[in-house]
Image 1 (cartoon, one colour):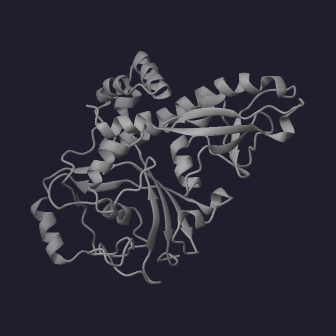
Image 2 (cartoon, helix red, strand yellow):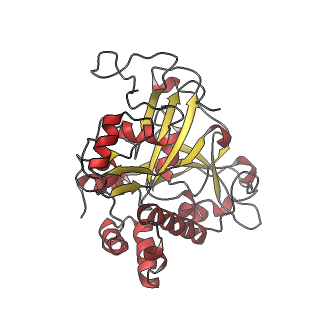
Length: 338
């Protein structure tokens, strides 16, 4: 069933102003930039059908392999466009100024991309991975009929939510139920009371949520997003594939609880460290050098409150590959064990 939030996610688009790189311009005057509304859930290489005709008269001879950069950083094509924007633009830039290339593919930085087919199979592989995390098997995805596979992919490409929901429902990848429920999996460091609670509810089935976390640990503090530092190398960002597991009945389980379960190295044995949004906010610890401070957390262009029920976030803000993509800027001391 479609939700209002789902519709907003699928209708979401980022205004792009795309310039052809100077080294590939063969005409005078140079071409004007292309202005495009790019779907948040889409992928940059899929814009090729619009950009190639627009710039074709200015391109030098040779084979085309499209790729994009932002401020000199080649952009990973298999990351959804909206996730790239959320990660790279702490202060949203509209339009987002990108540079497109059709020559000189940086194979030492980006994995090869052969156009739509590569993007499609990257998406299908992510779907298989999500199915395995949720159910322990990717059989439902692997056994999709060819017509269903084609229709599912076309629904993602063309932003057809109704078609996507109809086809994806056959995969039976539902993750969570009541958005106000959820109890985290037990940790050896929890107190005895928590262990007893867990034993009493052991018969309940845990939900496993596929999460991709893009983590940038900043070493400089900032109070305004305009002052947020930029990164210019992908090795400055940690790409974390770590599912969140919690029970669908019982104790209230928040987005902050989920972040802590993904990053135990920053929150060793503690479920009490919270976002330092305001020293006056109830339950918020004062900021100090020994606690990690979440400076920015963004999902689908939204900066949700950390106390929001995690299952609501999952059910409404996940991408069509059934992963929840989270962009996180965190100011923290060196993680435990590093």
